[in-house]
Image 1 (cartoon, one colour):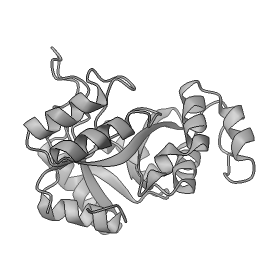
Image 2: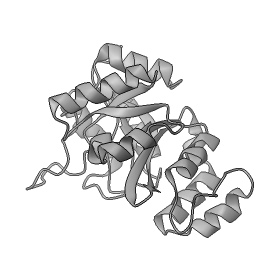
Image 3: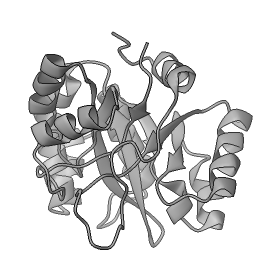
Length: 230
């Protein structure tokens, strides 16, 4: 059984300060035995993280953090992959286009597979969810505490599997609120430090394991999310 899980962190493949291997080694050092590498709009570091994790006994769930918009609010959507879909060439191309804000090119690639009616020059939350769903991901709303509560109440009505109820910058009452929302809506919930660098002078993000899921919570997340347990 896994004891301590942190499911939101970044490497040098996006805007983090550590390589994917260094991220895994740091997780091991901080007694975190299951993680997900969720770089912004890329999965290119996942293979190296998994290989390192296999060597030192840290389970790595393939992940990504997708940039989307709800009206004028920036909304980040976490996708966790059940298999090697994170390597899919079409997904990699789409993520690259998201990074370069080429929404029209994404529409062309996906053709009739995704509804882009609410997308103009930005990728909507709804379309982002549909894209991740197309590749079989389990979909979680990242750091809801950073959203206006009025926006959150509308966004969480979309087709999410869960939300990041435990987050580095939460107050205790925030965590309690989001866990209760998850239970009321029959959603899973995760924990994320949103780790970027271990030597930040101003801690805008957490260190790996600053917040985490416990053994029972990890089990519930993986089983309910249909994610690999072993």
